[in-house]
Amino acid sequence: MTILADHYLYSLRNTKTLFLLLLLCHGRLVFSQADTILALPVEKQLPALWKWYRADVPGLDSLQVMTSLKAAEKLFAEKNKTLLRRQTWLIQQLCHAKRNAPEKSAAIMLEAATIAGNKDWELIQAECWHFAGDFFLRGAMYVPAFEYMQKAKNVFDKYGSEKYPHVLRYEGGIANCYYHFGEYAEAIRYFKETMQLIGTWSSVIYYPDIENTIALCYQQLKQYDSAVIWYNQSYHAAAAVKDSFYMALANGNLGFTYYLQKQYDRALPLLEADYMTSVHANEAGSAAIAALTLVAIYLKKGQLAPAEKYMNLSRQIVYTSGNARLWKIWYENLYELSKIKGEYKNTGRYADSLFFYKDSLAALNDKKSFNQAVLKLETEKHMNEVSQLENKRRQQILLRNSLLAGLVLLAIIALLTVNRQLLKRNKEKELAQQQLQFAGQELANYTQQLKEKNDLLEQLRNEINIENESLERTGNINKLLDTTILTEDDWKKFRQLFEKVYPGFFIRLKEKIPDLSATDTRLLALTKLQLSQKDMAAMLGVSYDAIKKAKQRLRKKISLPEEGGLEELVEMI
Image (cartoon, rainbow, N blue to C red; front, side):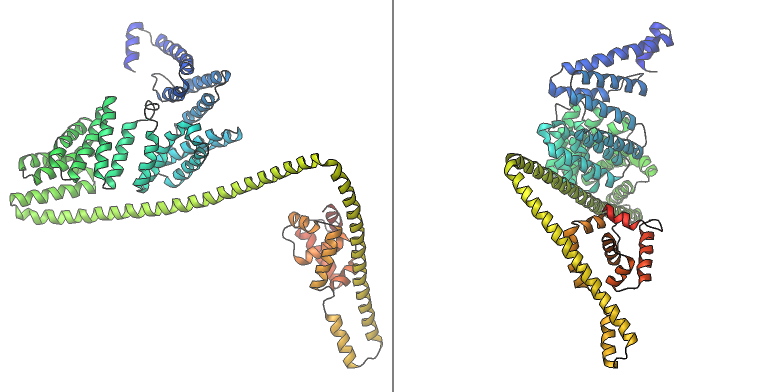
């Protein structure tokens, strides 16, 4: 029960009445909120919509959310506010998705992307891809996260931030991916893109967090001066909204940067404030790091009392953390403290523990670096594959568009020159018919010559069986009969003639039945000519039974009935 609810319960003394009142108030809020958004300047409407979506309304359940969003979408549609309407639809998908585990949420947004694509909402589809990537990122599934965010960015880049300025808010997702890959320079570049929207989108995007992360990137790159600038910006941005935790976080990180630069006097007050705020906020890890850094500074300044004070304050946190980094810093400080105090008996023991945790931390860092390298390679490989598929798709679209443009151009030319082209086409048609007749006759003659040739050879074979020829003449004729009746050159010439009569037959045949062998192709071509099996056998230089078996195998290959079918098939091609 919220404080507001307790107040109304006290006033009304009736829980049921309270619940109904909240629903009615929320209903009025919904419709007035949509109207209020429409009353704003255009550049402020979209941020206001997303701010409304992100606001936590007491007593608001999922059914109320979807009902209010649908009502708003309807209102925006009635007012012809296309962008607001589509963004409201997108928010509905997010409301549905965010109540699940990251992988399931990502799947819901990918399904929404498909729906948006079917509606021809290209930019909304891209935003769905981005949010799917964001859910993958939350689930530490970095490869698909980067894939879908990059896929979305490709669409955003096509339109540009001038036409669709709010897409810059999505650069932070790509930046987070690069941050996890350890690509800090790239992360900075994309985070700074999002910073261009500061002011307009400050109610939706939490800029102190982005500025703090940019500073962390500079710190990792050892560009400490830049890190100091961005930590200060993060602090002032958090102070503007009175966020004490982020103010302390930025100052603590700033203090650690001063520590890395050996500016201990500047680091001390910042780290002490960070420790106190972290303890107050129950941020044990942050408090321990601040305390141990303070110990290191006080030891370097030779101030043992405050050093021992912060060692004692951090002891319980370190002992229960199981964090190798904290243990390493802990034993570094113990080692230095024992040296300064002259407790050499403990120095060796602390040194052994320190070396152990240094090795453990080095192994963890090596493993992290290795995992980052593997992840980067997997991502690059995956993105190259995606890029190749995308390029292929673009080429196909370009080819299609080029063909369409060519057809349109040809149609225009045809309309402009219709009279002259009509006469020319008639003449070409007559010539084509003549050529077709000639080619048909030539094919028939050629086929007849092959048949006659085979008949003659068959006759010679019969004569050999009757006459008593010399062994030398018999051997020569047998060699002639054993040669291939339809050679490759014969086939080429036959095919050229066949193409003239039946243009495109072999291409269509290949498209319809891709896995035909050369023998199958020749058999179907002869079938097209309506030759008998005996003539086919003679032309191909095989037996009658071989033709019969070849046809049976062919029917089985292309799933035709045992009897008939081939003739009907070739007639349709």
